[in-house]
Length: 91
Image 1 (tube, rainbow, N blue to C red):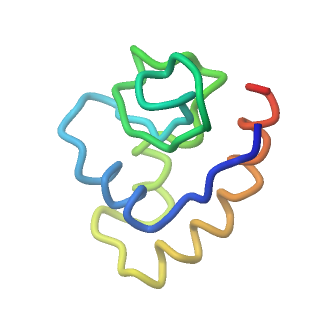
Image 2 (spheres, rainbow, N blue to C red):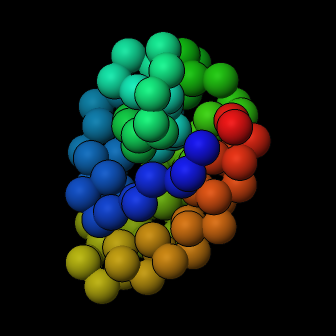
């Protein structure tokens, strides 16, 4: 499966998530039951570790609680290889 493009709004959604230890992860289709890979946010306790791209605490550690758009865009560049690796592992 090809890796989806991760965008700034994905990171913003992760940072805004009210859940305990939220993660940005890949799922297969809207219900994670098959289909093209998609980026989503959910609580890490409910996401298999092999699907996780990044935890919110990792983003906060790297960028702070309220990063600007430029910082988010730079971080996206760092996450691209991880997204590709996770997608390849799910194939």
